[in-house]
Image (tube, rainbow over all chains, first blue to last red; front, side, top):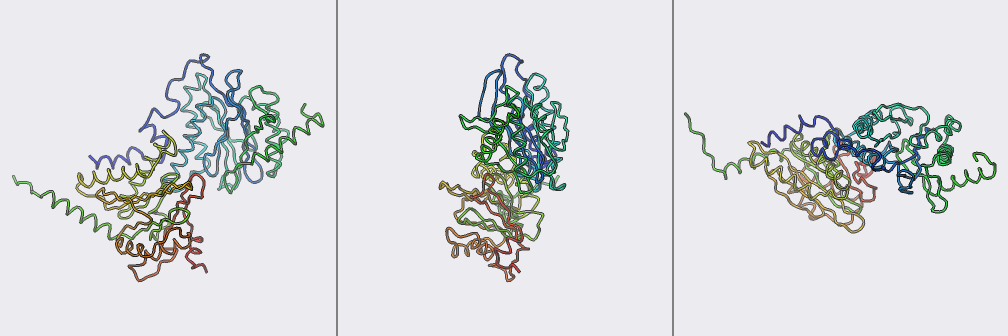
Length: 270
Length: 230
């Protein structure tokens, strides 16, 4: 009996996937398989704008801090950029509950693989795995619980930052320079399109990312801008060869204030 | 029709235990030491690809001696146990104690029910945090016997001699440097040769690290710690 159990370790889990393991061991914990509630009865909480910008050393990921439920602010301090492993991160937009669950599952998936195999998945492998998870969520997405993350990371083989966007069916599209996702994404993208330059340094890339987020907050009611009264500022992360790092809140505050005072002074962006 | 042999249960257990012990005694040893900033694991292992020491979860490491395929199975089962538990509850709820118990149950069942027992011993270590939570080291034998060890542990072929050596030489709150040197000296206590960084696999659970405390010590850093850098 035990012999069978040990043999089954191999036949049942022939790969290093945590998601496959979870589906077998605890199917109730796998997101997206339970029927979603009927739309318009409950208004789910939505995360709004996240973006990613490629620069010289890697990629920057940034997101505003607001979550909305319908026309109400559900939270002012939500975190939308998650570290998925040392060299990659995921920014979530859409229904906040399922999206955060997906980010957590994705993070465990990568760590599980790394521990079992003793090495990291390639960046393409990670991006592909995330796309399969989004596809698992499709039935819920059809009923309104849409999850569309941005995935970005540092590709050790290519020696550069790369970023991917997704659609609700799990379609995965690599973007070369920048992308934004969520309700304010169109405005953020427009802004990035004008400001992005080749070979930007970290400081310049940080400024461009924040300019775009402020533009999104300006035009989109769902997206939260820098909140000077409460001292809430966008969360910004960098992913480079040396790993995933936070941009200190002090620095984000300083750059936000610079941008805002310049707009006040020049009337640009008003 | 020939009658099946009768073997007394006592004899059967004895034979199995002897068989398992012989298998383990052939293998090289592993030592574990608590030092100032965490837990150090040192294995004599010339392979850089087939690990004897590995990460299970944020604060938990695993080490195995004996038959590679058997403790590798246990290692993967441990990672699965920890990841499912951490995902369904919270990361802080994954403990070495639960994992060590699971190993003990599995090895105990295999020992009594299967014809061939596992020829392994495994060790589960969990590093305490800076708030004074104690570190834990569990040592699980081929028959499911479980022991919690304090400060240091040794397993493998020469475990008894190594343990005696550590009993005399272990000090609390050592630096990593001292701990590595002590660990390596302990491994060579029964042998005449000296071990270089190429014969060793060394990792730590470093409580000063952020979430994931496990860290392998790469070759260059190890040769510096051993003072054999050229």
